[in-house]
Amino acid sequence: MRNETIHIDNTLEGNPIVLKLKDVMLLTKFRLSTLVVFSAVMAYLLAIPSTLDVNFINVLLLSLGGFLVTASSNTFNQILEKDIDKLMSRTQNRPLPSGRMKLIEAYLIAGVSGVAGIIILGVCFNPISGFLGALALISYAFIYTPFKKISPIAVFIGAIPGSMPLLIGWTAATGSIGIGGITLFAIQFFWQMPHFWAIAWLLHEDYKKAGYYLLPTSGGKDRTAALQNIPYLVCLVFISALPFALGITGWVSLIIALIAGLVFLIQGIQLSIDVNDKSAKKLMFASFFYIPIVFIAFVIDKI
Image 1: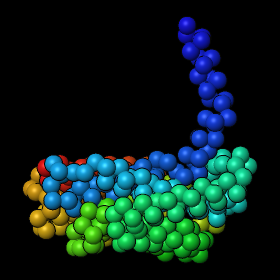
Image 2 (image 1 turned 180 degrees about the vertical axis):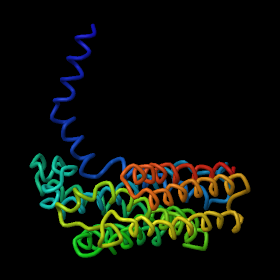
Image 3 (image 1 turned 90 degrees about the vertical axis):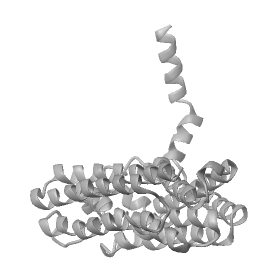
């Protein structure tokens, strides 16, 4: 029986449909897209009057629309970088540089998912949500992506579409951007700098092969670059208190957000002291935990 199970699993692994599905997931960066959906849904739940009266159909539509727009952005990103991806170890096996997927297939996926996602956000919710979805797609794929070869300022440009899901979720619920939406946008914006710079630190050598220099200083992995994280982390700690100040959340999530922010800040300070990959990895993992912990706390505290 055990051998039969293994045979079935191996057959599925070699199935052309399964392999194509895996390539589509790689092309659209499925896991990243689901994280974006998480941010949009959290903002939506924070914006509605009561999470006890949540419309689950709207949550599903927001998730679908946000996922499709993000999938389109990621696909256009890989289309534009298909030749560059061949140069880096971590991207050589992507569907386009490896030759497993034709360029026309990628364009079709990017185009259909982008249009469908924007329509869902604009029609099922409101024109502002649709516009923000289109803005996120265009700024990520066609401004951030080419800028990566020009200047480290690309990180700041990329942080705008990277934070847009919070505004999309908020406007989907309220019909307007509002101070609450801007606050949530700011939390994710300031989070993204240490998050991305930690990743850029660990992948610095691989990025250099493609001509990307995404750390904030010309010295690469040095103390000056490490110190750049600290102002953003300090701002993040203070900004994370704004949802409480605005009456969106309560005391419990305020304390959780402050503790999570201080832990994140300590890791940033540690990197500036140690200046090594081990500390950069700790900072990266701290960033992975920060967003889900803080936003889940915000939503639960509102119930």
